[in-house]
Image: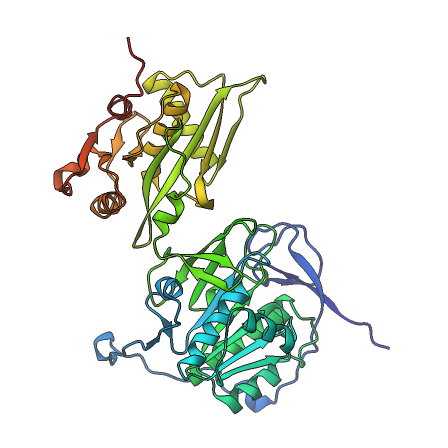
Length: 461
């Protein structure tokens, strides 16, 4: 009996090697080589080997390429349309990732129900759940529609046949890691199976004009499981963020060939499914503590969307030899930098203080415009002086203690004014081309000290 030949495949990049290695030579990842059974080599006919694999297309001048308008369909979910760039594009391939139980299947079931109610033919393919389980979820969220078809199958050849029979406008595959092609020897979820299944679905989407949504499992690090090439093949990659123990879910686009990246949609998990949160700023500030030190409001930009968030800080004298620095929703290195600026440029004694930072609502602030708000919250907690509830603070802080200009300052100020914040601290440079709304007072800060004095957080006497 012939011995079965095995190879080792990198789960990150798909690199193949006949022996195990601790580090992948291609992508440099450690402990990602997985043993798999090698597929038998196929002997192609000599004439087929000589045939060129391409389509022998000719090069065309860019001005000679005909214009083509991208057709979009409304999903019936405004927040999802925002993240996709205005709606579902015909023939697109979208990958949706997120932690287990965060709401991926629920949201896509609502998408199918809404589009089926508008007369479209929709096919929901599940390799993990039975048709009865999908019906239970659809009944819970009130889904209906004669064009809503369910297929419990993980054989890609069967999925292709059913797709050709129904010719759906939208198809959901839940999940891509459970799909397999019988002619391949590897198991479902392996690098080769995920890559080939996604390639087959991409071909079906482009040739038929059907919009395909793929659900992707994530690893413990939060990345999409399977080969990295999966994210390169699709047209858009959406990530669900948020804690399953909290009610709010954030849907973020990290790749979109048909719209803007870093757009954000907010949902609230309920017994009726994923409910849209249209006024996200008001929702995030609804439970804000008033007259409490260490709390300040800043306006972040998530794509084209201004979003008000509550920046919280707690500073207390340490009982350990080394003070603790903990941050939730903020980069730990950025926090250390701002604490050094406050000690050196402002004179706050923080070397013997524990500092805790939290961004309420499960938000994550990555833009530099949050620097000044973090400094204000830390100074407020350290001085034990609350910042008035009608103040908002935003700006980037440099190592010299200077406050640098931020982008889209006018949109941020208008969003703050809409929610009743009539005193706003902004970088002084932004005041040159910024007109204050009626009833709003703008304070231009040139340094961090200017902001500390303007908010009344300086040491008197």
